[in-house]
Length: 164
Image (tube, rainbow, N blue to C red; front, top):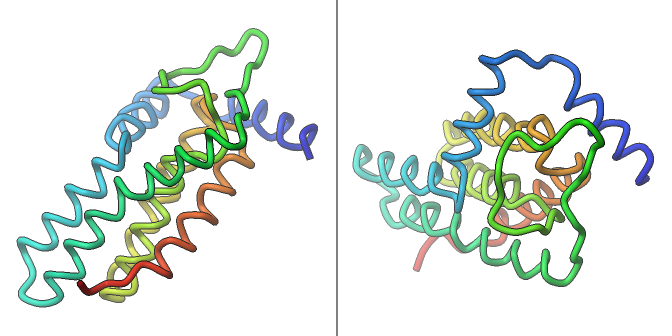
């Protein structure tokens, strides 16, 4: 698995790069730090909708909760971030731990929960995929970090109670 993970990471770091795509991936990654983009998105939906206010508020809270849970897993696993000779990461990170991807965990947790609140919430998976794919594209995570984060996020999004 490690060899495949490493080869996929190298492909993602060397293929399909342009200054514009790299800027977009970096900006999206910054917006996803600590689940911020998801908190803002859910609070905007909460402000604009007449129904399910409590559920949208819980979706907003889920982003930082997912980040915290993710960090606990990182402390247990202790997988270092990838290092590719000649291809430094194109962004910074708050820790040196890689597995699982917090961006993927928070993104898929909130997108899953949003879909449970309203079927249009499924559109959030577009943003979740973009955020998650940006992590190995920028060299911040192995692809398996993203897959594990997405799986953890989906599980969280399915089990979180959407009412207080």
